[in-house]
Image (cartoon, rainbow, N blue to C red; front, side):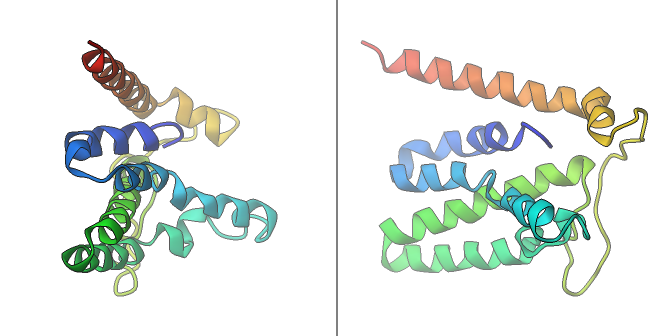
Length: 160
């Protein structure tokens, strides 16, 4: 996924928005892209030695533990636990979306099998061009259009 993480998480969390504190909703949206901050390490520190999905930020167990922590905290302090839980939810949705055409190791640390639903063949001279030409990119564009329509409609519905 290149552009679909934020719109995908927005669409997933939008039905819950009225029941969530504003900070919690914002945390979920923020974490829709947070796992990809490992790209900074990938490009500037690690010199692309390992695919960025190999870093801890792309390990579902990390975000599952954060989600569990947030849900436990929510029982005692809603304003603290909810943002933590939705932050982790945004990251887990990010990983689900990455699993469409990118490899995510869902069973790590017990199992090193990488899950990818669709293989994107190298049809162009650069891997980005291959991804942009693949039908899965149309899914990302559809997510963006749908999220924009939902957002626009919700803004219009609030007007008197």
